[in-house]
Image 1 (cartoon, rainbow, N blue to C red):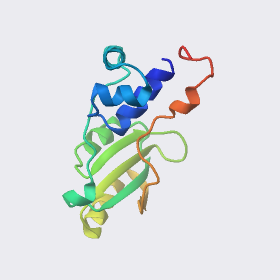
Image 2: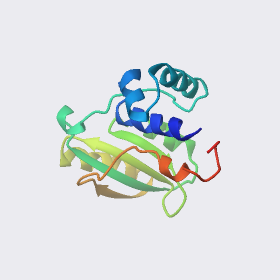
Image 3: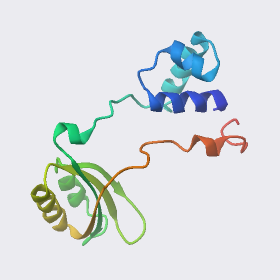
Image 4: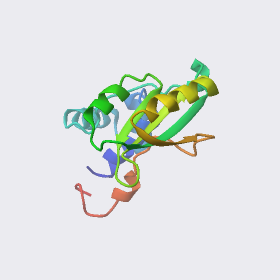
Length: 153
C-alpha cells in the first residue's frame, strides 16, 4: 500500500460509484493506472465490496441508538445467534471493557425502542444511548499510515 492506494481507498469510501476517470483526477494518476490499482485492491481483499449508504430516517427509522450489553453468560453463542435475528439491530460487535457487546440499532418510534431494549435485556444488563447526530461515519484512519514505514509506505 502506498499513498496512491490510500488516496484511492479514501475516494472510494467517499463515493464507491466514482468512475476511474473521476478517481484518476482525484489522485493524479491515469485512468488505466487507477483501474489496475483498484483491481489489485479488490483481488487482495483490501476492498471487500461496495454498498449504498442509506438515510435511515428517510426509510422510516429516525431513531438510532447504541446499546452496550454485558452478557449474563460471557461468550454465549446462543445469545449472538438470537441477536442476529433482531431486525432493528444494524451492527453488533464483541468488545473488551465493561460491556461484552456494543450494538447499533434503528427504530421508528420510542415504543419500538423500548421493545428493542427489553428484547436485548433478556441477554444481560444493557445501557442505551440515542444518537443525536454523527460528526462522521465509516472512515478509515488512512492518514495514520502515511510515512510510518509500514505497509509499504
